[in-house]
Structure formats: structure tokens, C-alpha cells
Length: 428
Ligand code: GLU
Image (tube, rainbow, N blue to C red; front, side, top):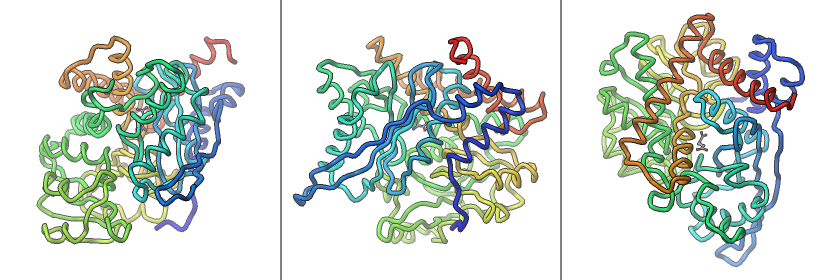
């Protein structure tokens, strides 16, 4: 565990300032883009099953909406803070911009642990969140989506509350809805699959045969599991996965040197991505400490859990064999660790490019909602692949031509587009 405390908002601002300086951004635009335009803080009282009332804290931050309505998920996490949500909302702006979809950046959070809440309590929390925000979000202003520990069923409760308040149907209010209820086929898989589409492109550039590669993952939630599934389908071998154990709520690394069996592992994993440790041991997995995922002798490391996981304290534990770090999570690498990684010449695919598949598919979901006509899954996934591949290539080409690392190149593209939007609107 890290003993240094990293503030994600300061990190997001540091990353922004570095590139703003590099591209000579004017002061007013810098000031406007290095912090959120708007934020909402509120309390959500919930009548619990035992008759008590518990008061939860909620946030929604709209970082920027110059390119379109703010867009981004709502996280459920016991350690959620306003600064984490601010950082994540900034990263959403860059994410939508780097894949060139007409959306801005926003993010929401509720300080809670849904693993300890009944279905009814979760529903009340979702409805309470929307009751506090219904006048400040909407299909044309700010469109939420699922994120850490929130899913399609939560989105539908939120939509239902929004439509009840406004007295009409607004399927475009939220994305990540269940299929058949305004959701898009492929949305659940989109973030994880998108991560692997960009990995596939990166390996082509690096002339590495994917079928000869091994990987270690941190996390087994919605992003990691579909990334693992597609990576193994393309011939890669996942040898280790770190995730939470169901009983003691601690992280462990589950290792199988000849490759994990995806279907068997899913059988012993719940919807929040926690695994049953005893059952994993029965299936022949070695059970190692939670942070052992980072020390594995693999070609590819995939942090796919939370922010601040690769830090100055563990970055030197990364094996000499590692060639690619694929940031499936938002903000998993701290700037000091990032410098070490760049210094070692490891090819890092930055978060807001690597995990943009989710929001890209959310955009497709909005398009389908507007037409009230839904595409087949293959069509959704092929459009997603095209978008991700093209964004990857633009970032890669810039990083080569300007001799920059991939993170800086992604920032240059993303910031320039947003800066252009605020200027042409006459905001600065
Ligand atoms: N929560 C996802 C993300 O961080 C998706 C957001 C969305 O679909 O709006 O990118």
C-alpha cells in the first residue's frame, strides 16, 4: 500500500499544466480548463431496511461542456471525494475530445459501499441522487452513465426518477441503460473491448505478436473482465488478476501460470468484481498478496481498478520483461511513477485514450435513442473499433512526429480541440 497520499485533482491539473505550457495555451483558456465549470454537492437521505435513515453524500461535477453536453459516469465508492470526482470529470473532457465525439466532461459520485446495501436501499439511493440533481442534468446538459460499482440497473432507476420528475420520456438523459430499455448492445463490453482494440494496434506498431504475450491485470470489474475476455480471444495469456476477496474485503492476486480460465473465474465472481478466495484456491490458483499483480514477469500490465495504483513506491517492482502498460482505469499512475516508466522506455497507453470505449459506446447509445432505432451488436462493435483505432493512430502519429510520450500526445490533441471550442464560442 502507498504511504504517500496523492490527490487525483492535483495530478489532473499537473498533467494539464505541463501540456498547456508545451502548446503555449493563453492564460484565460488555461484558467478555464484547469478546473471545473460547475459542481454540485448534496445530501441524500435514505430510509434503510432496518427503519433507520442514513444520509449519503453525493457530487456531480461538470468540468467542461464546450464540445457538447457534459458526459461521464457516477461512481459508488466508500472513499469517494470531491477531488477525485473533479479529476475524473476533467479526464472525461479529454477522453471525449481525444476520440472526437461531440460531448464534454462530467462525473458524479456517491460516498457509499453498494456491496453493503440491499437492492431496495440501492434503488432509493439512485432515486435520491436524481431528486437532488434533476434540474441540473439532462439529455442536453449533462448525461450520466455507469462507473465503478454502478451498473445498468442503477441507470434505469435513475432514468425512471428523472422521467417521473419531468413527466415525459427522456431516454437520452442517461446511458448504459439495459438493452431493451434504451440501452445499446455492446455497451457493457465497450470499455473493456476498447482497451484491447488499442492494445492490438499498439502491439502492431511495436511488432509484437499478441499470441506470444502474457498479461497481469489489476481488477476484475466490468472493464477488466471484458478486456480479459477479448485479449484471451485474440490469443494472449492472462496469468494473474488482482481483485477483492468476498469474505475479508481485501485484495489478493490470483495467479495461474498457464493462463486463467475466464469462464471458471466468472463463475466465482460477483457483480462488483469480487472473487471467492477459497473457491479460487480450489480451482488451482496461487493466492498472492493484492499488490503482487505489478511484480509479475509479463509483457503487459493492465491496471484496471482505481486511481493511484502505480506509485513511486511500487514502480520499481515492475519486471524488466514488461513492454506495455495499458491504463484501463482512470488515473492509475502517479506523475512520479510515470516519469520512471517513461525513463525505462515502457510503452504506456494513457487512461483517457485506452478506456474511451465506454463513453464512445454511450455516444452511440444516444444516437440510437435519438433515432429510436437500435443497431445489431456487430455494427456497434465495429463502429467502436473504428473510432478507437483512429484515435490511437492519431495519438501515436503525433507522439512519433513530435517525439512525445503517448500521454502528452493524447493531451495535446484533446486540449487543442477543447481550447478551439471555447475560443470559437467566444468564451475566452
Ligand atoms: N464511466 C465511463 C468512463 O469513465 C463511461 C462514461 C460514459 O459512458 O459516459 O469513461
